[in-house]
Length: 95
Image (tube, rainbow, N blue to C red; front, side, top):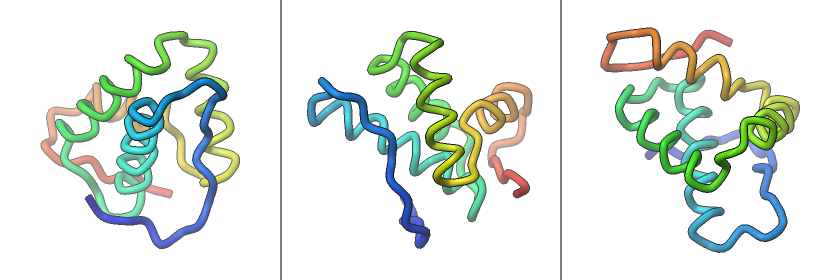
């Protein structure tokens, strides 16, 4: 996994344990990679699946997504929409 060279805070909800934080951080990193360098579609989908185990609620997911997009400029929703609709093995989002 490539580390982003941008500095922004990842949204973390109160009550998350270490495993939850790691799962969420992997998704945030995967979304960042999708915009910055591109990422394998399956890697992105797997990160999202793990994230949904931590955040099963659509409303919480939207809240986190808005917060993440405000800080980073990257949309979890749009990235996952592209990942689900494409058959391409690699996802590269346009800024």
